[in-house]
Image (cartoon, rainbow, N blue to C red; front, side):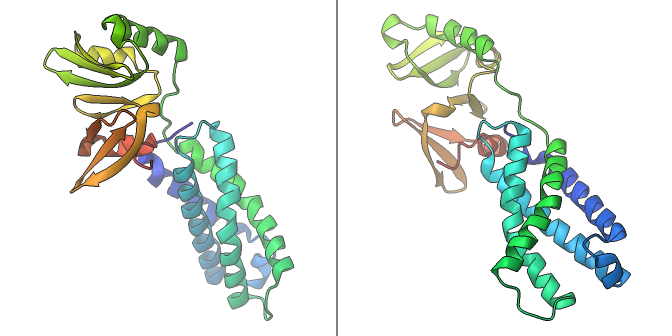
Length: 246
């Protein structure tokens, strides 16, 4: 289940709250072994680092069809890997007077997971979610558009382009112009696996073969060779949909 990045500040606030709580509780003997200021710096710093790594992992997982909890657990498992080395480094500075070996790192990774997975779940819960597709409804909308095409042009929908009150429909069998407003077509296709990438363009995810930069703007390259501009307004939406990483 993909998410947007608009909730990142809220997710970091969740991580900060977790760091403050851990600093107050002092688990793993940090309460007895570290002074209050060092303990606060230890837990807040490491928790925010872990949170940043979890967000990066969630960002890399966006566009994958995973349940939000599964994505959070996967992000926690991934984010805990660099965090284990960060904890080992902090431990060597503050508490441990010996070199940490592989066995120590494995144990630290297990301890980090006890924090990383609950933290990832809590952070993922506050990130806004992109609406999940409604397959049956989207299929009907797709059918309405395709049925308006000449029979020889009816195929897999690749892209839609607005042309005044008309709509240019691109399929894997070519393209044709139909009398339909772009806004109405977007409503029809609200649950289809695709995204609006420009004021007058919509593309199907499966139709995107690649992307590239043209100066300051992005362009999507479709499977039929069509080049579709991505406007600045829709860059984040296109990125969240996983269209700019192909």
